Length: 187
Image (tube, rainbow, N blue to C red; front, side):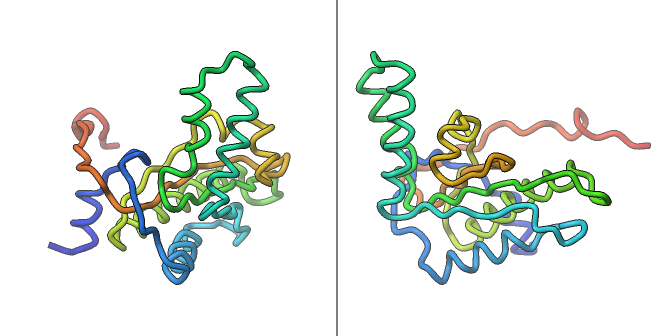
């Protein structure tokens, strides 16, 4: 069978807590970002950008998340605070795909949003092809403007996803997939 088809047939997400290092090297990160940027992009707008969290930056992002939640809830449990502190440190690498979709005279904003989603998908597939495991997540951080501003996401930008990348330290069970008969129709 074609190796690309086989990769796509077996690809599945692994939660970040099931990941360990080492993560991708600098050269591999450059390759991942290059591949992530090779997506359909009507008008050549590059309506997305990437924000890389590696090393100590992962812990700094966790501190920001924990501080926001503690500010909202002074009685926040230590267990929940600890979960936030490690949110971005569970995987050795996290890459945020940031959508810069904006009104354009010719290119519908929706197509720009889809292009950011395609960048996430290419990033996931490329990392899996390199032998890593991934999880494309958003969770509350992606939608909280305070968190987004603190990590440098502009007022007109949105987080399309935080792609966690690492080596597996557990087995990922496949989940049930929809039967084609329930999702496919013909015109």
